[in-house]
Image (cartoon, rainbow, N blue to C red):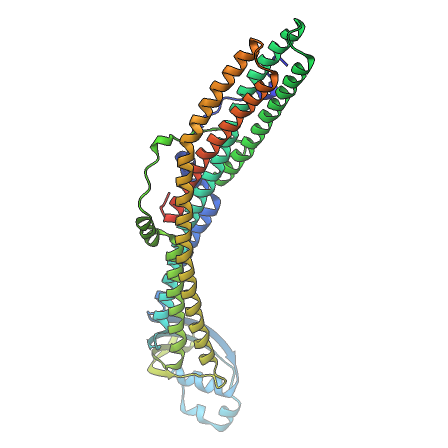
Length: 432
């Protein structure tokens, strides 16, 4: 028991501050890359919707052959090859087979559609804003999740350090108790109690190593790094915590910066655009058209013709489908507005919760540091008294347990402050 087991040997690993770990996660996270690709997708949809405002051109080239009378008559007429002999009754009824090349170039410009195209473009732009907000929201969620995992790593490292220190002290106490027992100054029960304490500390060291490995794996997964990458977390400087602004200022900042609110507002705009699009179904569509037709019986010998015109289309369902769609769109607007109001209330609650959690953690940090110093000094005194035969072994064990508890409370306050700061940044909509 006097020597440290080899399983406790730790490889040398670089120490990474939280800010560096968050930057790595934002650069390498696969889910965030997917969200950014979604922004590109919605941007393409905006371009496609905007393109509907411009003329549409269609070009076709075809070849047909047959002796169908109407086909032969129209082909000869369109290719300017109609002759007087083609008026013969027998020739009209039983024409010879004829091949025809037919090329058409047409252009159509929608002049008026009741606002359908504008509504479609506005809806696509709102979807793009929603995707942009989704990227910011995903980045903030990743930063908060990485901070949580980083806090777990800090807790595991602190637990290991405390357990390692208690293990070293316990081994010294065990060796001391063994010597005292051999000289008749201590009992076998004292030796056994300290041996159990040493075994418990060894188990805690192993447990802390496992917790640290799990926390690192979570961070590596979110960062897109090798899952077995080893690094150490650095405790932030408690004195570097900036004081909190008044709650009203924080709520104002959250109103302006929280991506959930921007996404809810964009969803409401999209619903309004869809409602305008549904209303446009009651109005006619007006289009201008032009076409160039080139027809001939040979590929290199053809005649051309042109055609221009306009069209008014007005199509309504007798069963009231357009009215039903308009009611659905109005309900969607009401739903989006209610969701935006709920999101605003949730943001305010998030800010209050994160603020109070941070204040509590900051207040507990100073108490925790003082408690550790007091517990460490108390342990030193008790161990000296035990060495002098003035204190029982139970006092030694209680002092060791008190030091572990005090260090655990200090670490918990430190980790709570770190994660609360990260969640407050998320609640305020601050971009990592």
